[in-house]
Image 1 (cartoon, one colour):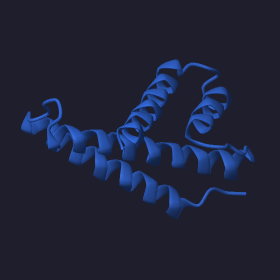
Image 2: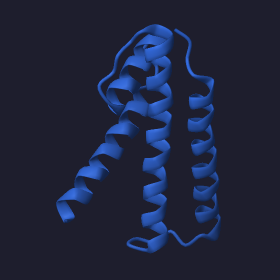
Image 3: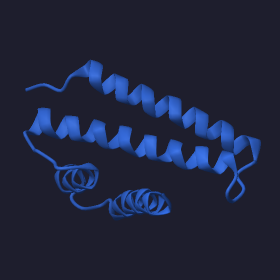
Length: 108
């Protein structure tokens, strides 16, 4: 089965939009600890990671018939399938993202 090009383009547009917004925050040079700008930047990073993982997950499922069970699983399986294990830094970034989310829930 072929991947849905419209869905992939939607995810890529989300990545571009969030990347531009993050760059604007960086350019303003207001990313100080506990600032609203820093919280916005962290949120945008999470949105970027989710859009990238959703894109990978869709391609794996439709093009290769590989089912994944979440964001980390999609990165790991894409790494094994397409890159032969050459993306350990990407897996580390996803783990950091998951750790950030867990820390946010602990504060509530």
